[in-house]
Image 1 (spheres, helix red, strand yellow):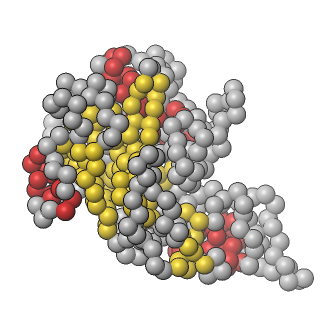
Image 2 (image 1 turned 90 degrees about the vertical axis):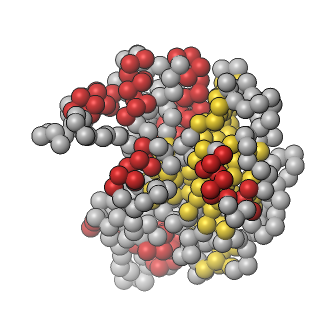
Image 3 (image 1 turned 135 degrees about the vertical axis):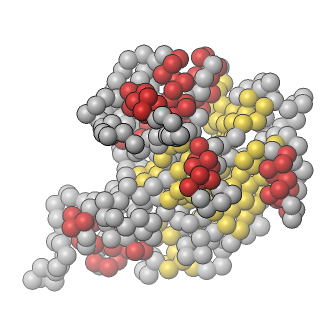
Length: 414
């Protein structure tokens, strides 16, 4: 262990990577996980530039690929997957977006596509075409970033803030006085609110043993997933040799490993134009809402432009994806907004499917990752508003769909 840790005062992220490799000697193993990239002001996935604005070199990109196998997709300061209307997005990207979108011509203190994981994953395909190395080949994890010393405390209904006394009461968190005024009303505390934050995320690791070494190997191999705080379990495999009903077989797991690759892995071109098959499986958190659907997000590059498309792979309540759009209709899950109790009757405890990409082009690189959505539940700020008897802040969604994301699988032509 080095005598002194590398800090922001010592240099850039790229210089930290070099320092880590130079100081990791003997039996040392090292990796870095980028944190909170939605606050990077577009510099994390800058086109052709390092974090300090200097131009890329192949040496720097290769080192980045070695040292950074994972990225944080979610934590208390919001989602770094995607943002509605910014870069590569879809209808579910309006989730816990803590930073406003950049107006035209602005770059600082706002969000652009260069600050989100989805754009970065697809941009990595383009960089690999141009330079022969993919520096953005990231597996997925999530974290809390809590400052309260309560790791794993990510339930919306039990949220007590993350800044100690600064947000320790419902009033402090959503911008109201904690006590009623003499006239029986509750005063608003100016425009101050901490409602932009959330309870944080969690990381999941698929390791064969619960040992430090096995968990390290799984992290390094990107066999990981992240959640928005729910304890969904999800996994994904890909292959050109999977049967169409693999998800229904008792030997699913053994076959998935034997004939394909787990999330975090690479698929090389198969025979002819046959698309790869992906087997996906998710189990609900028994203390959260039932599952609504499993989606696969595909990214590719078309004539130099970054592209993505989201497919509903399997949905709850027997709802089938539309053949033209690839999407399911809503399952009509409801929440009683006077109590925040879900209305029972919809959703699933488990979902699984084997899916083949209907848009597969064997000549183009592609990246695929899974996103799992729960039925909607009350956001913590809605619960705090109910406790205080005040209106919910319209700037923040009253309901959220908790979710999980897997590490991707990358396809490359032969």
